Image (cartoon, rainbow, N blue to C red; front, side, top):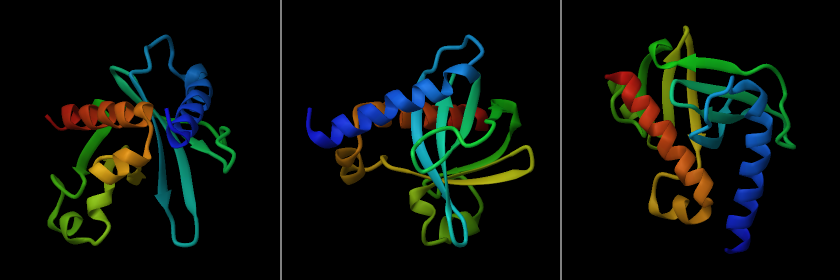
Length: 145
């Protein structure tokens, strides 16, 4: 295991510990580190994927919980676009859409950037980030059907 993978695995362990109190007895199928860009800042998230819910926990720059999580069920997700596909024409045309997971849930829009999903980014992320990303993608795809 290289130093990049070790760093990702250490981060994934910390994210699992931060998400543990919010899983309500459900198994964490995957854990993903993501960010959502703002105008002059970025909000970091630990995303926990369970069989029935997404747990979006805001993080500070030290990867510690920075507030209460947003818990979403598949039925809460109103629309989604994965890497620019499946959303509106505007979602597809936007320059950064190929790097974002976009979804609307409970009236709030999320535009999350996650490391992984292509050959280069997969090489830069660890196995737990890649498996967590796959669990997140599976959840979003299942919520659309």
